[in-house]
Image (cartoon, rainbow, N blue to C red; front, side):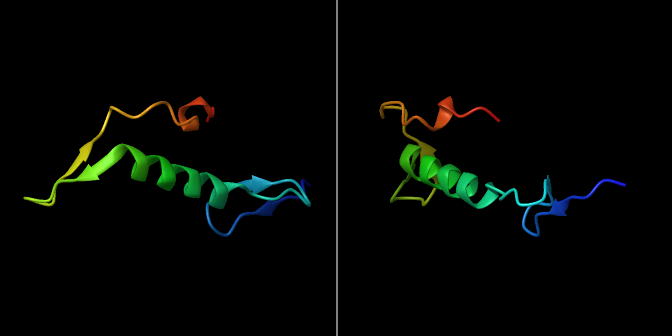
Length: 62
């Protein structure tokens, strides 16, 4: 019988003592989307801003 822990946030199966990085990944994703989206003042619609340099987030493999 295998022994593992389950992350209460994302449900990932982890080895004993292995920390889950779902919170860190979620924060990186939020920072990335905040940096590449802008809210238009007239209508409140979100739009992408592609004029930014590469932030390094897209280099992370999933």
